[in-house]
Image (cartoon, rainbow, N blue to C red; front, side, top):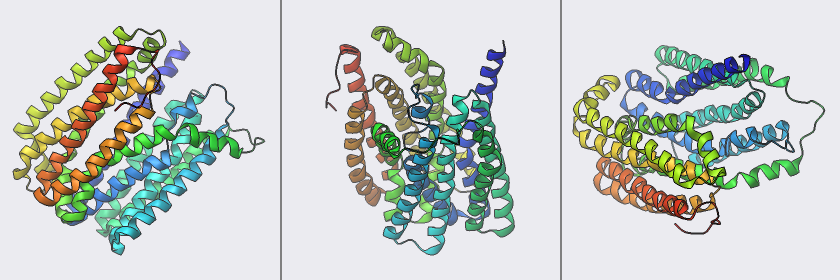
Length: 416
């Protein structure tokens, strides 16, 4: 009975924390749009997307590898030290990107502060892994929830008073740092053996074993945000903001697919372990069917009332982008299906083939985004989503079907 209570507590708080954290960027963008205006909203949208891209470096492959490390040959101290390296690298690379792009001081400050903000989140993730391993997942959920709520409150208050986006971004960095010192670390400290020293060989092993998971995550994030970088190259900050507004609803589809899939991940692993491939394919087909139905409904609703709702939320005229909103939502249905196939192939430990898929798609996306946006503006950015996520969908569908046909006995190959 006590175990069930803990499971329910873990699930509820973890869900609350993840949901609040996921919607933070939406709230931030609404605040910036209404208080600071369209130009600052464009700067914030690009800066936050860049921070999310670099966040994959700080996170590297996330806490799953740490949590599922049954042998415990690599200690939590080793994982924490690896996060210090990856988060530091994330900030350094961010500074390099800003220098190469030659942004003005204001835009550069907003971007580096948001990169540091996401770096603190990446570092917290390894602390959350320690809590999760000790059946205290609810505490990580509470931490995420508190950081999200306090971050939103501070951001709104500071931005409203100062009308300065740099100071507002600084406030959420301070909130995260204080939460790590006051909330996260004190709870984690009791589970870490002070007498154990960090082993550099273990740290190297972490980076080596998690490399393909990391690089796939990084390339995936780039593909999703390539249109924004093309807009940054060829268009104005206001255009960046408008594209950020119309792409925001699409993230709901990908989030929906993750929430639908989450309860089935253990079942997927069990079916794969028992080589029940036909049953696995059938179960995945049902999940994909639910996601498609939700996506079609989202497109229908978006076409009817999506633009008026977005105009009300962001206080900006968006009437000419109704078709772009529909195009992007359609693209994200394909991305959601690709994510489901990703889980199947990852369960089967087919990570190298995914690297080839993402690498090829990223190259096509880099070329396509710059050509289409330079020629067609925001419509080109929307079509880039269809081309890139459509290609991702096709390649994942092909490789997943190939896995279903051959089953567990097939070794990793180099097909795309």
